[in-house]
Length: 333
Image (cartoon, rainbow, N blue to C red):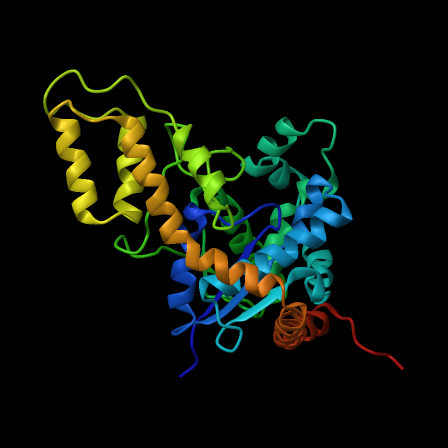
């Protein structure tokens, strides 16, 4: 029996952080056992913000090393660089012919990005959902793990797949479903700014690659308050965030200790943050060490990228040939 196919990508615009790890990557490692997984580094998508060549190349290498260090196995999953599979862009061109200006302009992601970068509202930004659809359906994905911010773009991919199937009267593409991780496996990691979740664009993240000095500095600057004034009072969001982080990386005895101090109004946030920082360092150190070792092995990284590209191209070319034949692109001579 064939395994269901899962596709997911990440832009090479920064480092993986604890939120990425607990929110998705740790679960990707589990998924590779039971799904046909395609994990790609979306370097073409990142061009919508015009990175310099140096930023693009170093970002791709960093994310590839981090994926591998977190446990994604290139023998079990297909891990590849988006630009190594040009068939994706060819399908993107075909899908663009049946994507309409009005529906693209109404997407939340386009409106948000256009507001954030008014001097760089490029066509790639507008057609971002079409390229994302191509990434997904070229491998005939059954499932796509998505966060809230990408739900609308997945719905667009579903729309384009249905539209193509209907136009050419053949069920070429499965309709990809959102994949929701089990509640026990999906951990929302709070940021250090006192609200919301951890994210690279918010500047409130602990990166897996951060060194101990940076982790201590970030945690000690985390938002807190003057302390509880009543026994057993409810924790404000910023304080609860610190305890939530501690519940992820610290022992249960440590969490209980600081909870008791808080409930008795004896807690000292400086001591709590020092403990939290050391526990984060201990938790991330093995991953960081693996990232450093992998980054130093260009031969291994090149081997992984080449193997992933070959596997992804084989899958993509099979779909693309089927699409081109249906559209009418057949060799005449």
